[in-house]
Length: 205
Image (cartoon, rainbow, N blue to C red; front, side, top):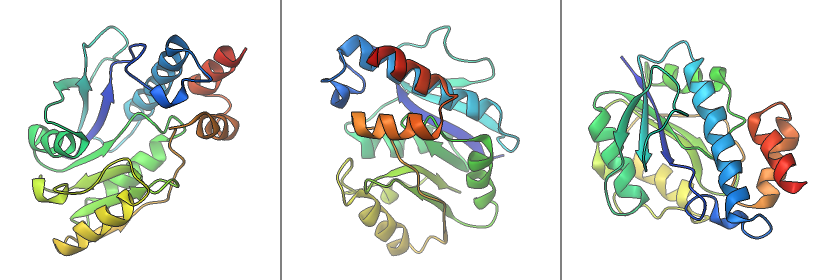
């Protein structure tokens, strides 16, 4: 039973999407983050292959979390440690995404889950040099050890680590993840019917 996991922060002003300020205010950036998270959770809820749906959250859960999600607290110092802990706490096979790709579709998520039926790992790079999703058939903290996060070489180093550990890996299509306002505009233009696109339009206005 493969879990579909979202690792995310509670959308609190000043704590999320800080690279959008400026031009956005902290409240505007939080509104955009909340919409991105809502789109992501909605896509997860509509997948067909997820055995479990889990939100690994930094912050307090609230009524914005859809029904059917388990909620686990994030733990660890730094993103690499938090990713390793998320896989350990979920246990078993899991496909994990963040909250920065609100354009993701249920079909793309099902593709990631399906990859773990035939491989040890699944890896989905982002166009900025990071990655938007990673899946493991079994939790293994060594996958993330010493992998630098949120830098242009993150995907390259992570891909090399999977190979070093001799994990058969399926690579998934790359997506734009939202870090900057330029990223946000690009994603909104590609997915204009999302909550994210509407929130960006309201904040820009």
